Image (cartoon, rainbow, N blue to C red; front, side, top):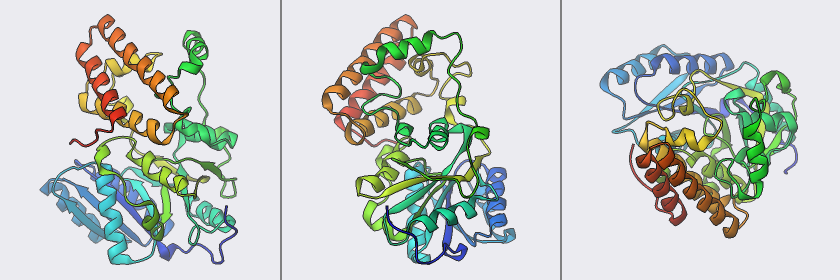
Length: 355
């Protein structure tokens, strides 16, 4: 990794970027307030196909906020990847070279987040070297939280060639975990050193929310792949930093809180979670989310996070076999077929689609 930066990270050089949709003014106000508290001077908001009423609410926010807000509207909701692409393009065209801090519209950086980024920047040179930072998103992202706890970052993408946690090389371990009387405990924020000086952890990538990179490096890694539509576009894009010889550093002291839960607790899966993720997938009530989550998982893993085609093919075959078998047992043939189709499209690279 590169040596220390020759100049400190200046707040004036940071622009925050976020993408919003639906009617989420209460959440985005919280995001804005947290940025104001940190002294971030600029925010670009992309309205991803929002209606006229929400546009008016965003314009009103623009006039009352204590930071400069630019609003870019897209005609329809085209997904987070296309939304952040629009935000990045606008920031580069209108503001020139800046550090870009990507945030979900419900993300609220804690008071010490900026100090932690400054400390991390002192240890390396994120301006002249291909180095990006990513924030700690708490217990919503347990794999990243575990990386901060243990100092081991490779596990945030699960094992190479696996389909989520499904891996033919670890079947006995997988079965034993499911037979336990209680599920394995997940790391807690209280177990992690989140002080500004906490040691960073090299990881393969992370979500959009909390990702911090200088705009000049976009010339190297490009923009998010809009063909993903939903899911894994963030991991694929941020992982390009490493694939181009750079580093993504998880900064434990840069904590970003989420004001809203994730999709797994929402309409894509039932409220009651089982011990086996395949059953949860088969019970999904949102076919599009189900399809994109599987297709993009397999597309990404087979190309960029793989131990070779033999293991990947074995895992995909096991996934398809389980989907068909459990689909019959649970009487969910439609979802089973969606999962099989998604697996096929992921392997063959058939991307695209709409929300």
